[in-house]
Image (cartoon, rainbow, N blue to C red; front, side, top):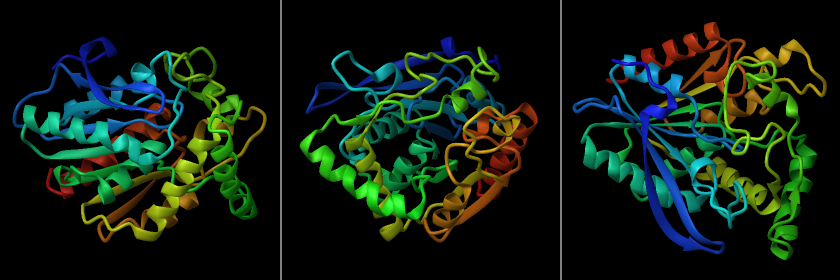
Amino acid sequence: MSTLSLSDFTEQVIECEEDYEGRVIATLLKSINNQPNQPSILYIHGFNDYFFQAHVANAFHEQNYNFYALDLRKYGRSLLSHQHPNYCRSVTEYYEEIDKSLQIIKEEYDTEITLLGHSTGGLINSLYLNEGQNRNLVDKLILNSPFFQFNMKPWQRAVILPLTGLISAISPYASQKKPFSHLYGTSISKQKKGEWDFNTDWKPLNGFPAYLKWVHAIYTGQKRLHKNSDIHKPILVLHSDKSSQNTTWDDEILKTDMVLNVEHMKYYGKELGPKVDLVEIPHAIHDIFLSTKEVRELAFEEVFNWLDAKGS
């Protein structure tokens, strides 16, 4: 089987219902190496992100999995000129393209489907498996550093996050212009200190503005998940062994999660349902599959051992 690059994916545009900004699309990417009678992976990216990780698809193909990836509305290939990047007013907005993607995969290859989500994609997938219309089409869930809690001090979460709802109700596009340190982008970009090429129009190193309406949508989604999650499918939660909050460059950034708190992943991950396995990946960064070669190979080994144990 040939090694994939991004040019080896076909793109299916998914037309969605118009929203408060107008036309909405999502983009389902399909590997040309997909084959009948193989289980499928559907990958969903995080915030300030899109699918560019062809090496992840290659890893799954080597283990005889089909691979699909979804660029959600207002992200990456799905971002239209009239839209605010990465914006939403409710996490449930994304359910439409997930519904349609799962249906497309089932119609193409009527085999089992594992949802794979990174960071915000992990939160969205977890909520979807509690609430989504086509959640019964999903057999397993894999989460790569899921965004279960804002990485703030408790008093900040108690005071600041509720205020985002009040402010954004008055000003729907109020935002924090540069919400992220450039250090995480620096750590993964091949043009800086990392290994990976990606489109900085779709994944800027400093991040897109964090619209307060989006922040409030994530916050309310997290609260809903914390209170009500009852997923009865096998779940694998991957996380680093350590978080960091560097404000200047340090090589520690290359071996820690500097975006989220891994303790939140462990605490809330085990509450998703009765069939959760938590696996720590030493020296992993936030997107575990973008960690150094040795670390990501360990992560893939853990994923495939888990899938084998769960019957795939």
